[in-house]
Length: 203
Image (cartoon, rainbow, N blue to C red; front, side, top):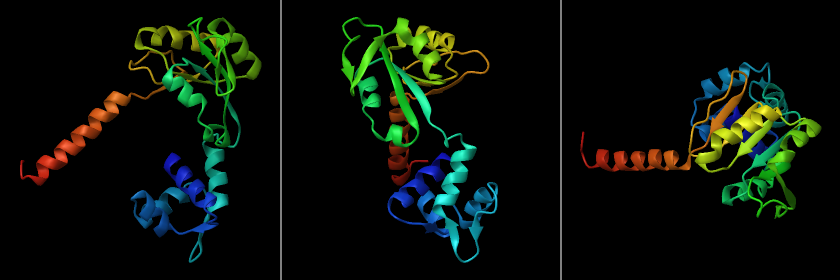
């Protein structure tokens, strides 16, 4: 659903108001039949010979993904990754509004990140409650990842995007998605290595 959403948003931004299953399939590496099957689950959105109205499908996808509302987000850890996240403009356009940035380092607290004042962790619970925040982003060292996750959960966060190179545990009802750049690079390096060895005739 996320892949469809991004592809359709790109086409809408490019001024395209209709798209065929063949065009979507070519862009996403899927067959026409798979596109029709997937989009058919969202209702009768397409018309034979005319394809799909991009805005209509986008609207339905956003509703089904909870993306038809604005999601306030807090970010913990304002190092290089944290500052890059808070500076990423398209987040707000896509419905994710960073309403608070936090750090444990007193040298960082009080500074600015993308125009937002970095606050102490002691302010986390109040901001989460006041802004009704449910999503949090962690960009902290692995040594403090679990304790920060625990603080976010205790404050009321139920969804965490974790950039720390450590898998953290959470109680039932809390969702965690981890992004590990090293693992991703290892997977990419292996794919490149495998492709090179396959081309060389190694079984």
